[in-house]
Length: 237
Image 1 (cartoon, rainbow, N blue to C red):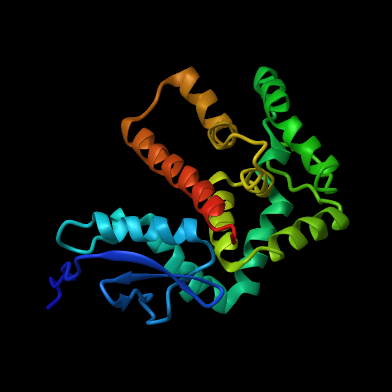
Image 2 (image 1 turned 180 degrees about the horizontal axis):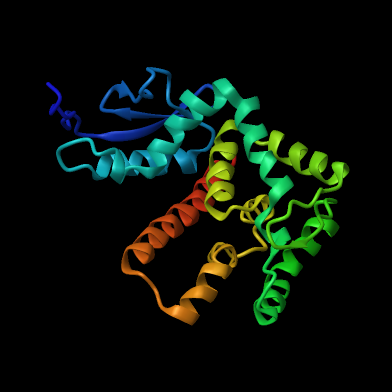
């Protein structure tokens, strides 16, 4: 039985209002999460995205081809029941944010990092009210408690669906500032991803790129961009 896979049994996929949200039905059957919870989505846009994935399946149910469904399941089954723990884990990135750690050498790289990353730190200080300190090398730098508290409040203000997206944005980029920026319309997600890869791209320019590393980076890039999309379509309508 280990090789058993769920087969497509439905003809129609529809989106229906369900309480304060929207559900997806396969013919007359409501879709449920792996934990058998009701799959209630906060917006019609997200419900349509999930429905589109179920409609596109040819024969077997393949979770790898269903990124919106996977994240919606995670939001309901994993993030919501342990919201405080997940939010604390995401907020903790603020104390060791990628943008705050600069190279000791060469000076050309250090200056390039400042040009690339300082505008985001200014945005965090001016718009989020969370100024952060920078350092060179790997020696930890203590951040202002008020700034960490402000960043934590922003994370904890998310819905479970938003936190699911933010978790991916932050963990993939290594930066809470970049992750929060990716939730704002004024920032381009592709640009933010490249900022998170600044050091790696610098090394590639110097020494060339490994094929396997490039494939792994492309998968992470796709996941980052989809996380931004998931955030957008998760906004309650």
